[in-house]
Length: 352
Ligand SMILES: NC(=O)c1ccc[n+]([C@@H]2O[C@H](COP(=O)([O-])OP(=O)(O)OC[C@H]3O[C@@H](n4cnc5c(N)ncnc54)[C@H](O)[C@@H]3O)[C@@H](O)[C@H]2O)c1
Image 1 (cartoon, helix red, strand yellow):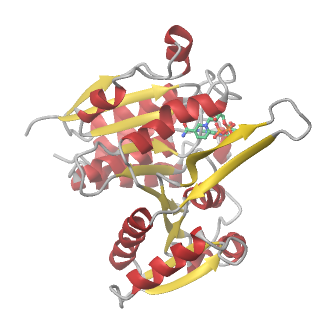
Image 2: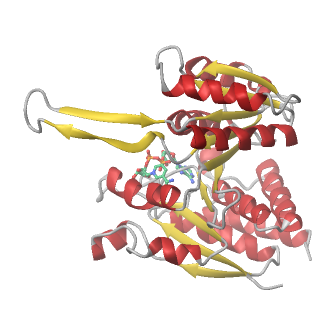
């Protein structure tokens, strides 16, 4: 079988540190990958005035997947690094389903540690192309007392419907429960359309138990009663916020993984840890690579390598259970020591 072509955007800060470990672990599974390193990010911006080249999307389209570390540097305004790279990829490749598993693995400390095994096991499906992050708006009266910024949320029926359908399908594969996060009491248009679409799509999935919950109440429920949640579908902003909370509940930013997918299209899916470039710890070799390793595990699943994905998943779970652990999880190990342990665990149970 020919090698999978994976574009690597290691990016800024801790991005390259965690991506290096993810690559080693994927290689340890024996799956053949042709990696293309793309030196895009804040250094590229300082060199060229752009976060990535003008033909970046065309370059990426020649690949089967993208593995990304993180972008963002104190020397570049965040709205530039985000809009010119991350959001440009998600929107430009129409990667409309952002999928984030939030599972508390045994051995991982955190506010919900000690819960029954499997009790914290949610899957977030976030709309990834429009909503509150559509990029519609403007600024007027610059420098005057009445200076104004307008940010418009955009909810289109096709974009809401495809992500809601995708979420129902995931719920059917899991425990058959879907929770939709909205705020359709205070916001009367976009989220009301969202609720209507959820109700319509629910009719096609009678086996799925559905509830629509106001996002503020849902945040509280995630902490109080996480076992009542299976698949959660949310808009771009709500999904963004809720999944940081979910990350904290599963052990912290260093652990959480994500995939941005365009099911039914040939656009390369994007895999990245939920965390950012963590400038406060970058360059010290202490970043937790688990979120990136877990993202690489999601990548192996999407590349059609279920045995390798299962092996990497088992290795991640074993290392979380036994250690070594980085400081954010109460340990003293370096990024590379955790990566070494995951590689050893994969090699101890060879895939092929
Ligand atoms: N997907 C992305 O690339 C992405 C996501 C969020 C933020 N950002 C960017 O990253 C930069 C920093 O943002 P921030 O500080 O708000 O968020 P952040 O996720 O980088 O860091 C938040 C906190 O989590 C810790 N943390 C993050 N990753 C960790 C890891 N792997 N191991 C251990 N601890 C980890 C950090 O040390 C910090 O205390 C900004 O420029 C922001 O725009 C990028």
